[in-house]
Image 1 (cartoon, one colour):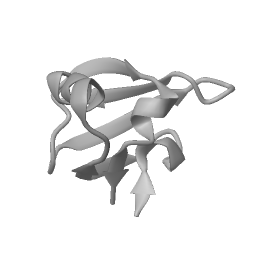
Image 2 (cartoon, rainbow, N blue to C red):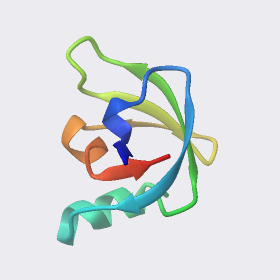
Image 3 (cartoon, rainbow, N blue to C red):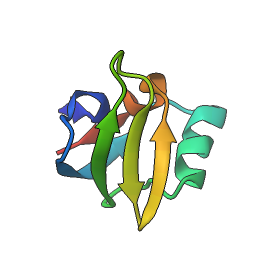
Length: 73
C-alpha cells in the first residue's frame, strides 16, 4: 500500500484506509477525507511539506505527517 505522501503531483488516488487514531484521525476526517474518497494531488512543496490536494471540490493543505497516515491506491 502507498501513502498519500508518495503520490506525485497531478495524480488522482482513492483513499483505502486511514491509519493512526485519536485527534489526528479526527482532524483528517473533519477535512472530508474518508474511505473511498478521491484525492487529487495539486502541489507538493519542495521539502514535501505541505502537500496541497483537492478533496470534494475543496483545496486543502495537508501536513507531511498527516499524509503518511492516509493509505491510497
